[in-house]
Image (tube, one colour):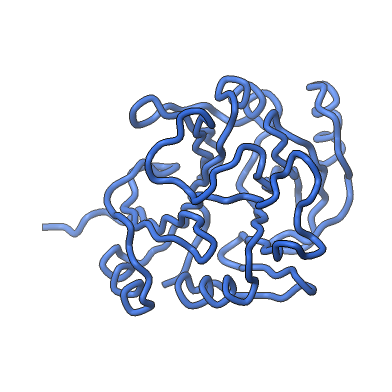
Length: 132
Length: 125
């Protein structure tokens, strides 16, 4: 049995509206409200579910941690790094670091930021370097 | 700027060897090493980087926590075959199979737990 790709993952956030605004503006995702305390971020063939901390879908039992998936997540974009950093600056989002990294299928150029809950977000592309 | 897909994410785990054994045997992933002794699980165009809970590297999430993950994977294996495979692996099914809302439409899902008690959903369209 082989896994093709991740379909979605679930993260718990302190403030759903704040997270929706961030991911829409900074990462260009589409947003969808599912129910009170639950929303989704859509991009490509995948999505991220957001559950409000303390909301009906928030994890409470043992084994899931009180704050689900305080995560490091890396996203792939086709935007060049220069465009990513310019966009982040326009959004007023500080870049923590940047440089080449080992992506899933080769070397990526990555820019690191924090989301409003302190999750570490990496924005990357596989574009080859400018010719010359 | 548009996001095309996830490239990778990080799971903080108690025991890298145990996690690799589980994800290769149960989910058919491939173990790869990169950087300075780091470990990842490869599948399709994506991977999961593993961080040992007792030796967390520099740049990480605010509160890395083993067992806090909640992930859904797509397979082309029919769900009945998934169930049979899990049975053979001795992995208990938490719930399912049943329909769920996937990123692109309705998926059939079963839920299991990995060695750190992360919730793992295995699905197909």
